[in-house]
Image: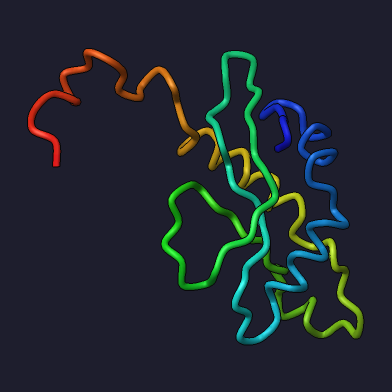
Length: 125
């Protein structure tokens, strides 16, 4: 599990380096891949902007329970024309996706129901 800060791009880069992005994106770009490699956002940012995420794999047909992001190379027509495209293309955009997902979907303990919460009353099945 890695901890990063939404305001500190270097903390994201240390937790998910560009070499890892390039390897994961290359694996995910293969035809008929069964397992996607990427990251799972585990928490929403706290007051300081810190959040947790981890490297993860997910089956392509699996319904995600938590926020899972898989990197792919985002190539344009111009980039496809090059003989050897940069494997790190799209890295900055993927880091931005991680931050956006943490802000939007991360688990927030303060909003989860606890003992005595009216949402937990009633018959159990």
